[in-house]
Image (cartoon, rainbow, N blue to C red; front, side, top):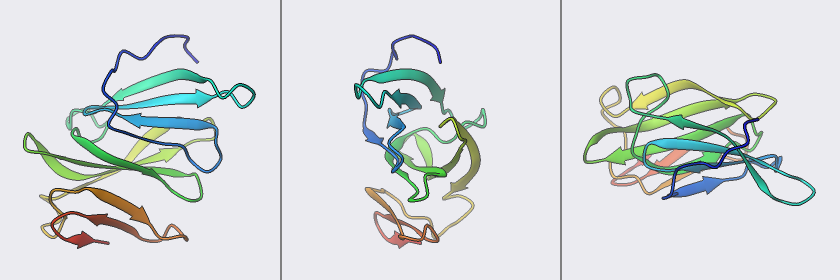
Amino acid sequence: MREQVCPMKLFLEFVIPNDGKDLYAATFNNLVHYKIDQQKSDLQFVESITSDGNTGNGLPGFKKIIASNDNKNIYVFSSSMFTTSGISVYKRDNDGNLELVEKLLNTDYPFMVESPFSLALSPDDKYLYAAGTSILF
């Protein structure tokens, strides 16, 4: 881990997976990873993943972030008048690091929800629901 302070200032959303080891915070174009010190509950900055839509790091315009119930995935919904709407799916490794595995774009899926404001997972992690102008699952 790198000992440094994250330069991001405007966090829009954050999630702590059920295992309580990590905190993931979303800014408009960044997914910021912190380790949680289990003794002191302090946060230690690990990395910031910049998402511009072109580098393979996910979609920009983060609005909502959730973790799977089994602690294996992080889902981020993106929507902005300046970016393509969609969902970025990240896989968590044993150290909590993230790797982009899939981008679900509204241009590829014409039924993709627009103007999202909420994401939810079924308890068995089989279904992801997104709500906005419609509900997608």
